[in-house]
Amino acid sequence: MEKPHIAVVPSAGFTHLVPILEFSKRLLHLHPEFHITCFIPSVGSIPPSSKAYLQTLPPTITSIFLSPVTFDHLPDATTLALQIELSVNLSLPQIRQELESLCSRAKVVALVVDVFASGAMDLGKEHNLLSYMYLPQSAMLLSLYFYSSKLDEILFSKSRDPKEPIKIPGSVPIPRTDLPLPFQHLPSAGYKGFLERAKRFDVADGIFMNTFLELESEAIRTLQEEDKAKPKVYPVGPIIQMGSSGQENGVTCLTWLDKQEPKSVLYVSFGSGGTLSQDQLNELAFGLELSGQKFLWVVRAPSSVVSSAYLSAETNDPLKFLPHGFLERTKKQGFVVPDWAPQIEVLGHSSTGGFISHCGWNSVLESVVKGVPVIAWPLFAEQSLNAVMLTDDVKVALRPKVNETGLVERQEIARVVRGLMEDNQGMEIRKRMEQLKIEAANAIKEDGSSTKTLSEVATSLRGI
Ligand SMILES: O=c1ccn([C@@H]2O[C@H](COP(=O)(O)OP(=O)(O)O[C@H]3O[C@H](CO)[C@@H](O)[C@H](O)[C@H]3O)[C@@H](O)[C@H]2O)c(=O)[nH]1
Image (cartoon, rainbow, N blue to C red):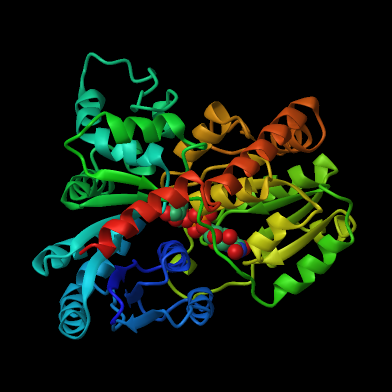
């Protein structure tokens, strides 16, 4: 008998393509009775990291490449999130055509769309398909989305003390400055976009989240139990990329790691597109040097916070931006990789003992799965929220202080690096992360919480 199909719509950019496809792979691994067809949008050319990844997909996932869109007439102030959403919206006519064609030749039972591709959910409704949203992020963020209209009133209320932390249902108190980036500029296009996106969740028949009960028990319980009018939520994580995420310089950095002592190396990376200012890059270089700890640093050319490499294949030689003499002085202490390292292999290497991370959710889950404690250094998007959770709730991270000009100074960097890698405080954090690693592995075992949750959905789809 013909396999039931699930249509999947990611959004453009490595970190919104890979998570939903890894989710698709996991679904097929547990339930091989389905076939998945994925409609892939892109902006200009597809970045090499995404291209390499797409070549590794199993034959049970069919990729259909949509014509690339261009952003010739966008206002400069448009945020990355809005650009990603726009790229999918511009592709909607094509997605409609492809979905129609798929429905005419196969039994399609459901549509799953990335959080930034929510415009496509209406197409699922047009074809009477169950339509799910895939949030490649935390339950805490979903809780914020659900709470955002109430929070909007609070934020604009004149009687409220702006210094008072925000209490999102199911989460630890959050300083206002740690709310996601759109909340730092009120009102703004980014903030309006956040509120609009929040409404789109209500259209879904269910929401998958890449998290697990043992990591976010309170937030997940609140989402599942408190607001029955909202769609059902399914924690199905941690789902991280399987296989290598590296390019050619990966081999050399793994060889370097092979020669280091167990858990002695601090890995430093700011995700797929995070960059620092030139001043901050200098402070980080001097701070690492000052800490005396071994490090493996993925260096990016400085620019305004998010590099254009996030959505396209543009590059710039980053090593020329390091302070004069740094590479020579630290050649025995550290290893510097331009632009990209095979992060999952690095985190899983026995020499890696800590991670300076911008707290993108994939990096958070990868550090949890590999049991590597974190120095939380959020840059943009919802990363501060993730940093608060890691530091104040699960307590598997340290967070450096930022000075009044927004800079993390070299002495502060050296202090937290030593704190994580050497001190007693670091030892407690390392122990907690080891425990969380075990819980993460349990969640995706055959009888684990996330496996059972996914099977519940698969069983209901089989019955259609
Ligand atoms: O040198 C590198 C750098 C990154 N990665 C991989 O790239 C991914 C990066 O993902 P993430 O840590 O989530 O960071 P971003 O790319 O910045 O992610 C965007 O998307 C995430 C998921 O929606 C959000 O949580 C972030 O805030 C947002 O910036 C991870 O799988 C890493 O393993 C590498 O393999 N090598």
